[in-house]
Length: 102
Image (tube, rainbow, N blue to C red; front, side, top):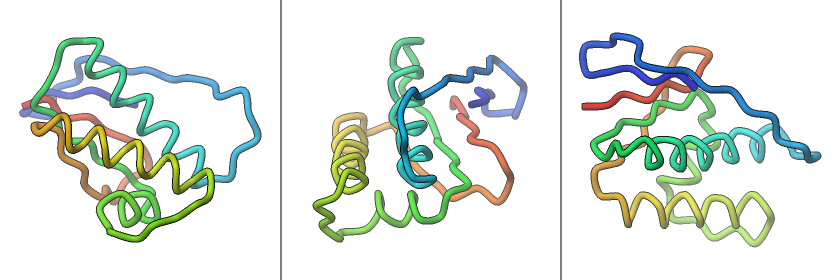
């Protein structure tokens, strides 16, 4: 995860290890949930989350109901986005998750 300001200037970076056997999309969405927590712990609110995993962005921004582990994580992300009105989620064309503080 990379944190940048509205001008694109680097602020901070973070990596984490998830000690579990997850599918690639479960790992991506778990990373998004961790990014939400990280940004909140830093006290930021107006934040754009850019993620390169299209399946994750489509699932979180979509309306489908999924009763799998992935679906539970999607529901958690949707709840965060409902509660944190100044958080936005977009699909990124690059290879890393970027967090933009505006």
